[in-house]
Image (cartoon, rainbow, N blue to C red; front, side, top):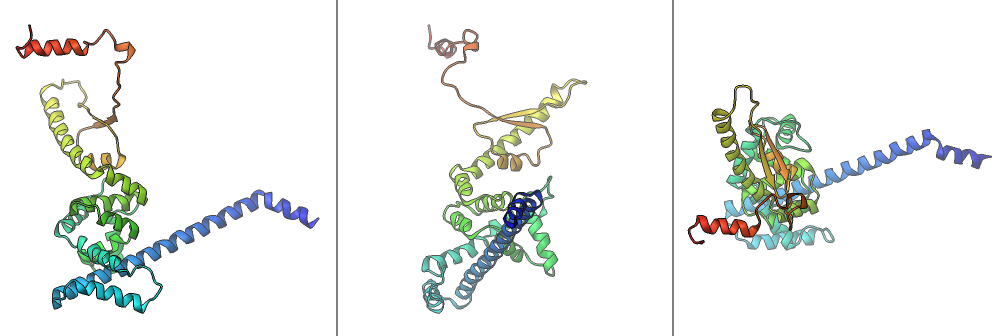
Length: 289
């Protein structure tokens, strides 16, 4: 009889709801613990890199100090991971990358820009606000130090070896923090040149604004609605669209296109063939008969 009650308990709605809540709590605790561990690890790596750079600048130490630090830390903490020579070099590079003047200029611009719409994930202004709540008027270096802890160390290592400029580094770091990109997604975005495409798209959109303003001033009728721009892209990335169109005043639609090897059947006979177009071009260029 007891076994029957146990079985009934397991399949009861109350128990299923109870165990679901416990599982969610376990997952939440694990995520919180992982974030705390990641934050402390990155703060440690930042401080090691900062300490090495400061000593080199103040005392004139050479690069050999990096090898000495790696050796002595491994001796002091045998079995601990993260203190290899290559790791210590990365910590130094990690600190220097976020102290670049161009990188800090990007941070200042982001902090001065008013937020547009809801801010998913961990945005830089949000991190800055939380930092100010925890301390008395922190400086820019403190805000950057807190901001980089939002992104896992593996992501930082991935970016350090692939970024071409501080501006590109900041773009990928901000996108990763805000949208929670996994390491594989970040890698794919870098390989696909997401930053370069976003910069190119922004230039295109500036031209689109110019054209739409001109069209509205010169061709728009008294009863016409404002013109709507349409941008056709081989691929549409929501991150690029969000960044590139953030400051646009005119309505602009974004859509993808796909090239077809053959003309659709419903259009055959309605458009000139490739041979006909070539003949027209020859005539226009004066080389045809």
